[in-house]
Amino acid sequence: MILLEIWKGVLAVGLYLGAFVFAGALLPEKYHKSSLTNLCLLGFVVYFGVFQIVALPMKIGRLPLKYLTLTWVGILGLVFLFDIIGRRKILSRAFKNCFSDSKKIAAGCVFLIAAGVLALILGMNVNHISDFDAGYYIGLPVSSVYSNTIELMDPYSGQMLSRPESFYILNTNTVHSAVIFQTLNLHPLVEEKFSMTAALSVVFCLFLYKGGKLLFQENRRKALMFLMLSVLTLLFSYSLAGVSHYFAYRTYEGKAITAYLYTTGIFVFFLGIFREKEKKWGWTGLFFAALGGVAFCNTAIFVIPVMISALVLPWILLERKWKAFLPYMAVMAVSGFWLCLHLIL
Image 1 (cartoon, rainbow, N blue to C red):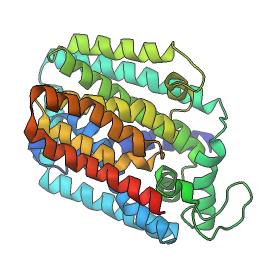
Image 2: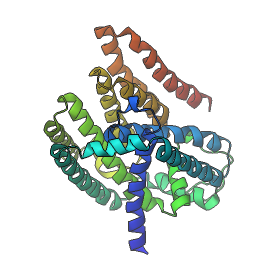
Image 3: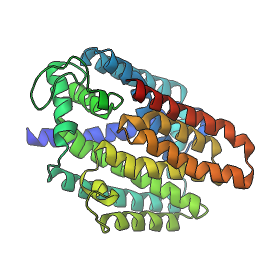
Image 4: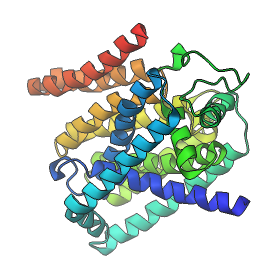
């Protein structure tokens, strides 16, 4: 039984990464240039942005969890069919590009080893510690599946609630865990603390690698060094309740994902815009980061627009990129919508 859960957990890691790639492939080629890295990173924010739009109305409407599970599985099935039929050439090119020469193969092997080791370390860390918020991040999905509701059962008392807690009303990452639990029968102790942790570790490494390539003019060796030094800095600069603490020991928690992953992703998406090589990829990434970031924690309502503004506004004003105001305002409109909704609900 334990071995089966382990294999299911490993399978879930592959399913997550595959879902991110397929979500990225929904967009036309000009947004990702058939790059597997671009597809996965863009797909990550698209995946959780779309889930937020699908799950939140059902959560507010207090619909049974089963309805959301069937809806999400159906959406993923349609995405898979669409990509296999309409985007198979893009996906094929993306995978072929990874093996087009020996240097790319070598860089890919080094990346996989580094990301795999990091995922294993973080998975071991998270699984051997019971943190303060485990009752929320683990208990809430379990109580939702048990009651077939979307967060209408208190995980501590077992009492049914008349409505979801207003403070967490916009957060849907625990709802996503409940959907996966109901679909794969994979307990959140495995799904959150191993599968999600490992998948997010790989995405984090991809963001660092992509950022290194943008910073060092596509030099793969320097990008890999940047990746390794960044990870080592986080792992060996431990500070209680700091980013490194949440990164190393509470990787799957919403506030941690906002702190170490979304902020890194926003910076890398901005680099794509700043270098003027992948503007469409960068702006689309920022838009979906603003759309789905609130799924993880309320802090994202403020952190994401502030960080985007801190990066984009000086660039617009100093470089006089006045045309960039339009996509910037579109991103800010999404963040403003979440803020207004948070105040209303």
